[in-house]
Length: 479
Ligand SMILES: C[S@@+](CC[C@H](N)C(=O)[O-])C[C@H]1O[C@@H](n2cnc3c(N)ncnc32)[C@H](O)[C@@H]1O
Image (tube, rainbow, N blue to C red):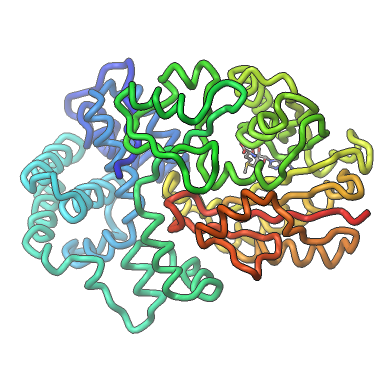
């Protein structure tokens, strides 16, 4: 499976001598280094920095793909790389200048994780970059450290990392923060945690959701084949297709023409769980960029109404752009704080309410690996408090007998099961609803994701089918 290459567009690469780690974008490795430094110093999301920097760099398609792979791989493996680098950097990696540290990580990643890159290509270019950005002393140190890594590569294998504490071993072997591995181990057990960590380091595949109002799954599969792409019908959802190594899929005609959208398969399950009927009134409280709102509208056959609300005014345009592209007329994008939606909508006015809540996002680590290092246990506590308030604020918009669905793209009890348990105890007029549509239950059972103990809550882990980690709970307001 390869990560999605983002082709570089426009803008010429900068060359020539650069000092103090200033940006130089002429080659895949230089561009990757610039992105890594920017992600670290600005706290920006890697995917946004990749798009921005590759546009400035004007790399060939294959160089852009390599730069993308280097960025995601280096961030994903950062703790393991530092563990090994520390043995060979005399003063310790913690004392290195930011760009030198990133250059060593980036180069060690190539030596230790990418079979197809010859040692001389990784080392020589690292040395050249060090000379251009720094001085001879730094270049000599980079050369020495990387040559040592190369000589010792037989000992530098993740599976050889073994510490007395199993959580520490998993954290270092797969490069995750210890606090997160400890939380996951307590919740899911050691085996599932290690599988989850390993799976989070794999390259993601792209998910396509067919718009049933515009095309069939077979038509979209044929369209992908014609474009030379490998698409496979999803075992999880009838409108889903997994695409591997497809480059920028939004450049295909089917996307612009509204025949399909890009969405991960786990995400597609959410609207299926809401299971709206044609003509219903549905509120999506936290809707941008509009993936689930548009899916809900498609499932309603374009009839009834979906209010797609988000806090941020600029996101209204993004949602509207999606629904226009998909030619959906039954979605209204609105701007507002979900905590105050009861000031806009009447109590008990909705057949169904979806709260796809802001969350820690650990289910999408494959797409945004820096989340591992930027999100803290404190952030989880803060976001849990917000989720709790959001649940309390929107629930009474659901009509008696109506459906309330809560979802997150994370795998932490305090954001998922604990939220539901607390919510149900404070709101006894709601109950868990395991009565999901029969075909969906059959698919989930066949996939081994639920059994007879299923109570209306589903936790998808990233190792299940390689789709995002997701939590979905369906509740019903008692009549
Ligand atoms: C997980 S994303 C939603 C993804 C979306 N449901 C989809 O499928 O495309 C969470 C969204 O919640 C929005 N958000 C955060 N706090 C909010 C609030 N208090 N009220 C409304 N929206 C909020 C964020 O702007 C973000 O777009």
